[in-house]
Length: 367
Image (cartoon, rainbow, N blue to C red):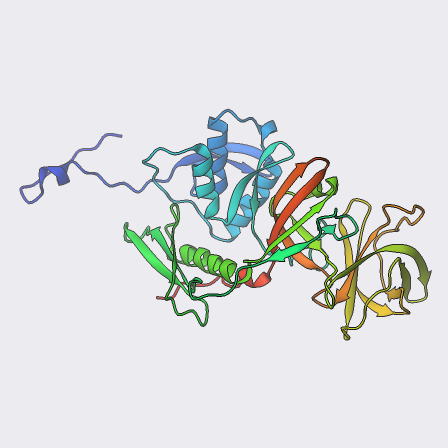
């Protein structure tokens, strides 16, 4: 770039030598699985893929299908990456800074460099999704499900402040993120490089505030190698045996009848909570079938109107799991945060899935 500058006696020598430019980088794009020539873009995924390519990764090393899918998601949400990088850092940190602008993180999936986004699951099949894994005392070890959470105190956060570099004023600004009832007396302060939009920064902060409110519990359990089916932020339905909530058992028998199927449980099913109940089952690959509205037949049997697989009850071991309980309590919806295999078992941790976290994903920042 060549520039001619005409100065004057009202500008200092330092000001005369400074040039401001608003530039958009040209990067290779992808469309319908095909690489396209470089074009000006502010999108998150093209920048990340360009960095991975610069590090020597080939297409065969990258989970391009998931990068392509989330590229469309980021674009639809208006999430961009606007940043001038003028300090050294690791490639991983820079990639995660960019992905954070779209509520995503870098990860490895089946040996491929991939990404995972924290996003609502209600749009998937049935209630939670066709890839929902099931965990219950039926496939847990001697270390069953435990749920731990912090006690409320005066030191709890009641607000979030997000600092972002405004593309309007070209200066760092702060947007206050408060849910109804927040006093803002103890605030978590976040700095969000790469976000130049006040609305985008506000949505990020409101999502973080939802995380503080609804995701403080930690779910821990140990299972067999079935736990390898769940990666970081994988969705799963987890059952314990706490009275009045979810209950686990196994399918002993299935009989088609007029109006549906009668399922026979290996253990008595507890209906004492009253009201409507739901029941879910594990398919042979461990994914969830259901949940289905359940009607009591007797202590061991329930009637359901539909069933999307053929349970194999020909063996005494590895029978399909049953997850049963009152509506809203038949299982715990959990996002996996850790899966640690050792000695033939997998120690797992997770956090609650709560749709309220996403309440302000499309909100407009207050003036």
